[in-house]
Image (tube, rainbow, N blue to C red; front, top):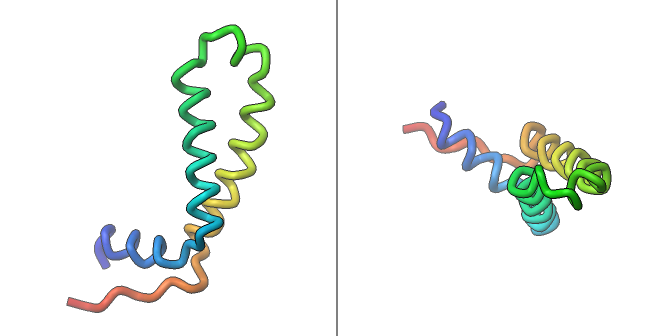
Length: 75
């Protein structure tokens, strides 16, 4: 199985909630990376890191344990 087929099978198992949480996770990740040296982010880093870890953990769990993932067709 190639990596593209594997990723497509996993992504088909994601729900609308998973995709929405992935967008929030990506925004928080961008805030932390893009503004790491800004004083506001450094003072409040835990308010960004906690949701980042929780949302990333849930998304990663759903991605790697995709119960509804179908196997791609063999070529």
